[in-house]
Amino acid sequence: MLDDAYRSAHGRVAALVTGLGEPELAWTVPACPDWTVRDLVAHLVGTAADVTARRTEGMPGPAWAAAQIARLEGRPVAELLTEWEEHAPGTAEAIEDRRVPAGVLHDLLVHEGDLVEALGASQPPWDGWANAARLVVRQVVRGIRGSHSLVVRSAGTEWRSPDDPGERRGPSAGAAAATRSTVTVDFYELYRGLHSRRSRAQMRRWEWDGSPEPWVDALPMFGPRDDEQPVPLPG
Image 1 (cartoon, rainbow, N blue to C red):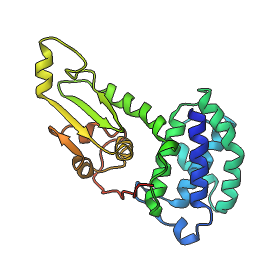
Image 2 (image 1 turned 45 degrees about the vertical axis):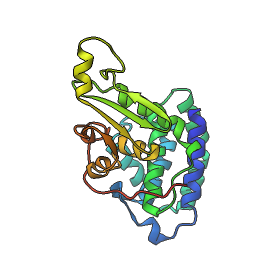
Image 3 (image 1 turned 180 degrees about the vertical axis):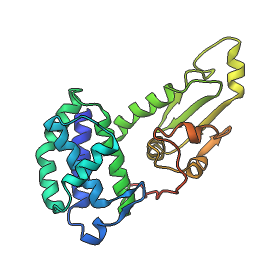
């Protein structure tokens, strides 16, 4: 499943950036304001090359990504895409065989969204990312502990934090219910928010029953942000 998700995302991103002119390649990516579209493509290509060459020391830190962008600087995007085509099958296999973390797949899926939003394209098709995204949502929500509880409703599924009264019984269940928040949100927006691609204000505009605090700070895996992000139209 994970290998198929990588292959399909690779194909979509390659199609999205093929034929872009220099002005578009120089656009800043709102989700990664230190990078241009070209930089982001170089990172994705460089990641595949590093995975197949087993250059994984420092993965997935900023120095690792910066070295990829520097190494591929100045090369035509068509040439970069040819190199990615060469390394994509081996990268997909490494993800499926657990030789590299599933985070390599999610790095591609999240950056696909970054490119879509930078270029004003539509949301990626549901079947290309949703199954992999469900694993992340479950992991994040099930990892929440504390006096507050959370219920997340999206894509026809409900996820509850471990301390939610729906997950446990006893005298403490009533106290937990008093501090429960429930959020109902579009699945693409949820996935983007969990990867720190939505601002606090954007997350507060999700449909909340109960307070959105402290969740607008706690849910984003890479920390909260305050710069408003573009939201693409459904595909």
